[in-house]
Image (cartoon, rainbow, N blue to C red; front, top):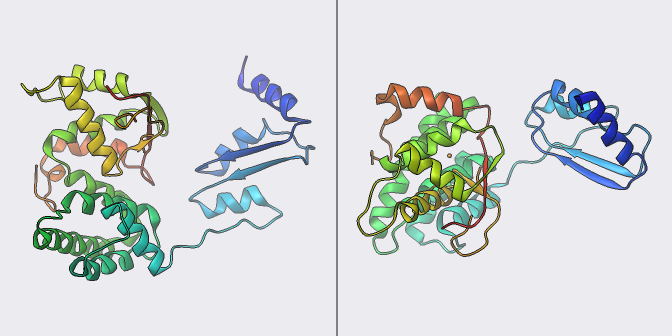
Length: 279
């Protein structure tokens, strides 16, 4: 069955049905043209919702009706999101609140960027030594301000790069490996772990099996919001969406890693969906 025949089959099934179809992240008008041939033209009982980072796509698809432009977060909403990601709580000590609010304000309501940077802040948090945490958050704040001043139009990719740079060295290859999968690709945890082990990315540890170490690597990437998780069957089960010093330039010094990262860097962060129970 070719694409045209498959499209007609979908039209036939939807023609008289009630339905809601959500298409997330439609990149361009050509993508929509390829998709809409499978949608019934006369059925007013069905609804289609698309999202796109490209405002022209929304205008084109919605015509003659107006598209709906999502509002950016307000300052208090940005700060709330940053706290939830970085601290897993709304509570925040006074010595972190000032720098945290500065970081949140720099993003002007850009939720994806807030989640990425929140993932970095989460790894620097130490309840037992708030002075160390405050110093690390100040470093992140300085780096964020520098990135936004240099090139505010490409901040998402640079924040992904920053998140990569903040990874422990043993996670670099594991994260870059995810870039070989198509966007929004779903892979079972057990399969991903086997691939990591087969590629030699998992460091041996006498105290635990390679699979257990790989599980910890994956949970670290998830906790940093570089991978999104789909289905958890247990406390240690997993949906994926990506040491040198926090502000170091690990990728800049490694041409091979930099080239690999280019394949991962798209107009927005790539998501990989991981499902199934962890070992």
